Length: 240
Image (cartoon, rainbow, N blue to C red; front, top):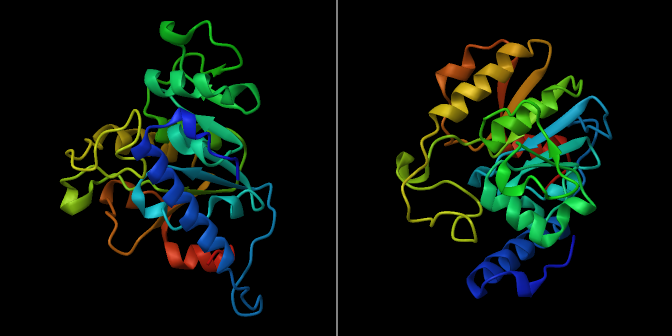
């Protein structure tokens, strides 16, 4: 894991990032290997992609385990503690933060064209602009790279507390709302996700969810879409 530069964060942000690192380290230390005869184990697979939204359902996943099993596409502030194969960010404040850290000079970052950062170097631009939110944009990008199966993690859509409160793993940190704020409207995310599923009928999309996660009928109508319990996902990829 990349070392956290304390000078770039407020005291509250640094405390939250430090706690997240502690949980990730603890998860890695507790790994136990499963008998491959009883549970299938997926090894490095060029036919598999992982797309990370930032819903809290993925908080228990040690992201480092994913990279040995396929390419990882992730969004926004994930770069603070993890380096995905592709980072997608479309919010101006987020891109400016990423640029301040210099992340795009050593890693792949995709975004939409914008006058606010048109002179920033080493960014990759969608042409034409997708005009979508970061999560569905990342899902679309992965769908263009020829994977047979794409796992969707942290695509929670609905807010916490019965849909009333913000559902984001980076709540209470820079450029994010407070955890006490109201939930973000997810209608656009749902519509954009549906578009990706519809345009890619030969890709198997698997949404990894907690037992109590929202399970929208709008997605269940697609033959190339299914859900998987997060604990089953951990067993398949030997994540404890």
